[in-house]
Image (cartoon, rainbow, N blue to C red; front, top):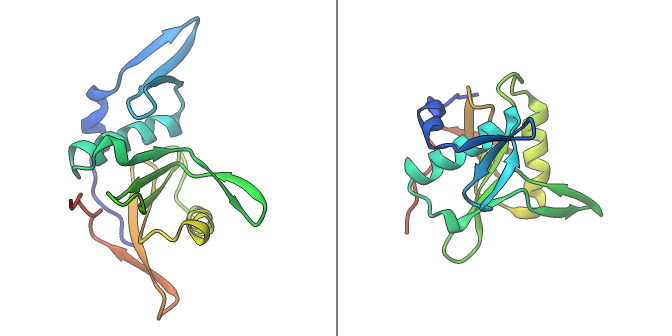
Length: 152
């Protein structure tokens, strides 16, 4: 499994963090609201800045934690990036930096993708990131050496 070399921490200065009544919050520029800070949310917010500032994706095409129904069960994906026709192009699963990326994370994103049919899948814990596509002929994942840039 090919790990990508993405320095997400170079975007940490772009994060707005504050404390209110002892609760740490981070500002989500997509949802335009303050969100409770967690290690997974930290990775999600850094990845958003990476997508916008390094890969060139417009903020308006990034969706966060939207609900989908899969076999009658309600699930929420972490991030999805849409194209100009509003078809999802990249599905991203964010994990805490303290968690090792395992097959379970790929199973989770593949499960979501059964409903969404997205061409590019990303799993990241902020330390290691993996981008892949599904090779239907070989019935397996093909790992890529980069996350696609925005292509208008």
